[in-house]
Image (cartoon, rainbow, N blue to C red; front, side, top):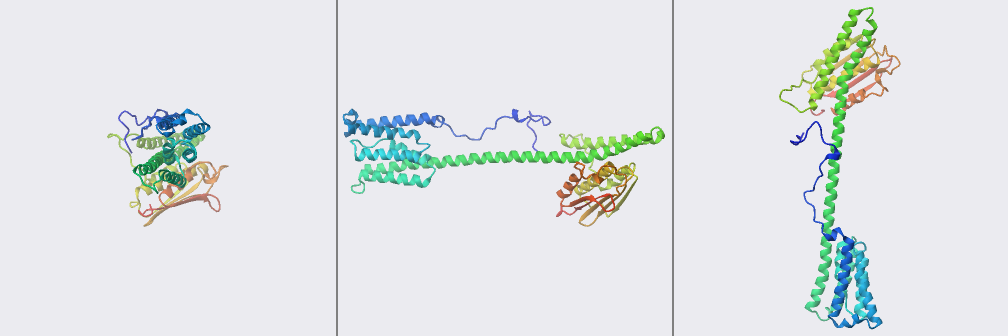
Length: 418
């Protein structure tokens, strides 16, 4: 685990509302063209219209500006429509380019004027904003064909005509390159957001899994001891008048069970706190602690038979802990749901590659509650099954013929199985 920053308390993490904003390592500069796109398009349209009028004033078409005939008005209207069509160049790039190219064709072929400056802006917009590559290529090919025909390059090649063709292609190509670059940055940003979401989801899953593990450990540690304390306290209340000495012994057992529960809970909570040099953790229980567990249960349950088989020394620690918790939870269910009159048989057998566990009760003493705790709404059996599955084993629990409840589990002890 990563240690917290120096100014941060590990025991009191900040909530989501107080977290500092995460700044990206690099963020592209957003100029005025990106901040105010509509105002930018309006300025570009006005600039294209004014440059067109300036170009006409320096050519043979200067008489058009006088608006002395209907042809002059038509030429002026074509320039106006072609230039101010640029207001929609971002949302409808190929349509705007078609309007501009059509206005240019009308001016070149039928009216006393030549071209409009808006064609250069529409070529760039065609490459920059048109998502359909095929339509973009067809439109730029049509424009290049018009420029070649207008400059008569096929009849009499000139340097100016060649520059005009290259300039038209370059404007479209620059826009296209910028579009590809923008798409790549957008995909990278989306991927970064996706990875951040996945990282947060993974963190949430890890937190949920850790909470489940802690809840399972707390259940295994506390439920068994509390069940013993509950049964013994009830017995002490029943016999306190007739047999004070037995009641005193029962209450002493309650006290011992409570101290043991507090000790195990303190050990579990100590794992969650920051480690210190002075703190020493007690070892986790294993198969060698089963006799002590059985003796505690015998103080409450009428009969508990314990049958160990095999050598417990070679069992891995995680398997031994899981086996101990399964036996402990099974006996806890017997105490809670069957009672003190039950007869329990516990069998733990260690083979060369697995360990087999069997906890069986006869069901005697069970009142209205379900035998063995099934349908009780608890999580004991589910927790035991989860422990077995995590180690690569399996666990079965259910009612047996003739009454009673049985829990059987098999846990692998080899590295391949675990």
